[in-house]
Every structure is written in structure tokens, then in C-alpha cells.
Image (cartoon, rainbow, N blue to C red; front, side, top):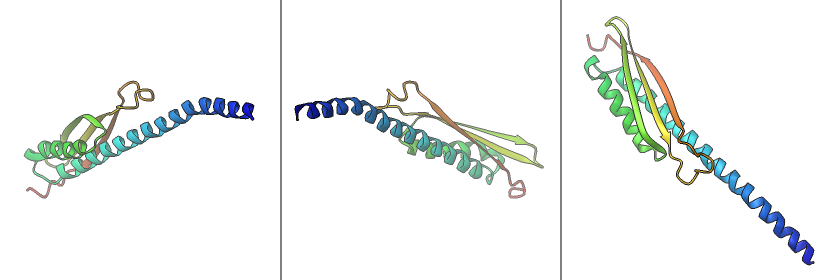
Length: 131
């Protein structure tokens, strides 16, 4: 009887670190996916919002829309947004890039270095709306 109890203890001691790593990996993957989705949503919404306002307001509207979405995500640290308007009055495009650093608190064994995610979205500007 004692030998089976000892082998169960050894098996438990060997499996606990593997289970911990598996749980930590799933949590890290969840944070990466969550932050990626927030960056994608921010860049798409900001590009859409920028494309329907006047040229003078495009950059401001794009930045504020994206920052609002990124700041709501608890795993996004140091959010950055870049809005670029290209083209002339005949055909214009808005390109929004959203970037976040993934919060690795509690997951330093899996994510020892800060990783960043980025998403870019481009929209054609409706130039006839403000003529």
C-alpha cells in the first residue's frame, strides 16, 4: 500500500508544473487574442468614423475613437494610434494603425518580454458628403 501512495505523490509532483504551464499558456494566449481583437476593433472603427467626417476633423476623430476602444481593454498597455490621410479631393483614404503592449502581469514565465499587437485598417473617404 505504501509504495502506491508514494508513486501517486511522485506523479502528482511531476504533473503539477506541467498543469501550471498549461494554464498559464492558455491565459497568455487569451490575453494575446483579446488584445489583438481590441486593436482590430479600434482601427476598424476609427477608420470608419474618420471616413465620414470633414477633412479637418479626420485625424482627431480617428485618434479619439481608437483610443476610447483601446483604453477600455484591460490588457492593453501604452496604446498608440496613428491616423494617416492620403489622396486629394477626388479620392482620399484614411489609414488607422492601432498598437498595444500586452499586459503580462502574472504571466512573466510565459510572456517574459512585453509583446505588442498591431492592427491596420483603411477606409475610402466619402468625398461627396462635404462638398
